[in-house]
Length: 221
Image 1 (cartoon, rainbow, N blue to C red):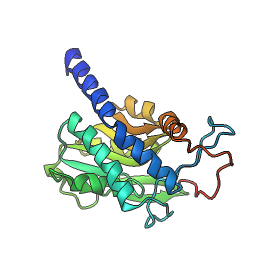
Image 2: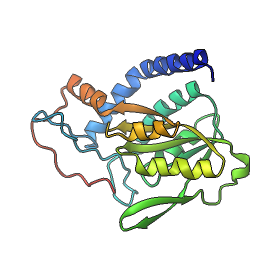
Image 3: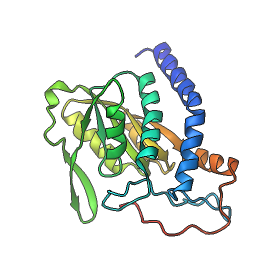
């Protein structure tokens, strides 16, 4: 893509993020209400707890179908600015509900669930399951949370090995722990609904930052 073309796409992405204003604010409030996020005023710079999983996740979380659908609508608006893809790939397990919800929005898109295996507690993407990859040339990666980005980067490599284009990825929250930079090294651009700092700002705006230390959260598997 030419420099002019890249600039045009970048401008469009910024416009879409601005258009998400009310939806993002509503999503932030709902995440706080169900206890998915609990920033506290004692030290807002800390990596505050986030539990962006659903009750049926192996490590259960508080997200309701309504919250998942709202996040999916935000992601879908960003996707429309990026252009069509052949499939949505959800990083298991936390990314699957969001990927499935995006895929159900019109025009409906194929939803892929990669197969994973664990080695000493570390997860690895090993295949795309039974997906007919011959009909897929471009996909969007989706997860709930991005930290260092190891599993998402590994998924990009597996997909590229199958000659599938992966230019973009989406998450509900980017922790800002280097994952987006690692994806960028692979030529994959991250599009978060929130960065951690943006989510904190919305919490402060609604006076939802607690004076009490957070607790009761399961660590991300």
